[in-house]
Length: 67
Image 1: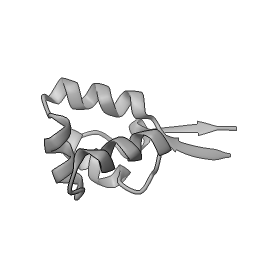
Image 2: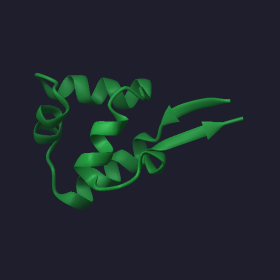
Image 3: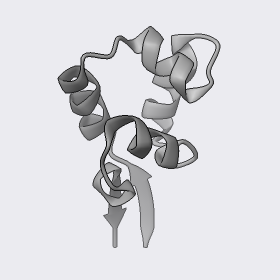
């Protein structure tokens, strides 16, 4: 099994909550929004706990599991 970040879901939550890419990047600890976009492209799971707290959802809502 391989787990990946669901980047489409993250972007939809970001837009629904009204965050700009710059704001969400700062909340995640990135200095620029390029780090945020790289995280989405690479589907990295490192920031999932922080994203779950920001959006008020469970961690498993932001993850895709491929078998």
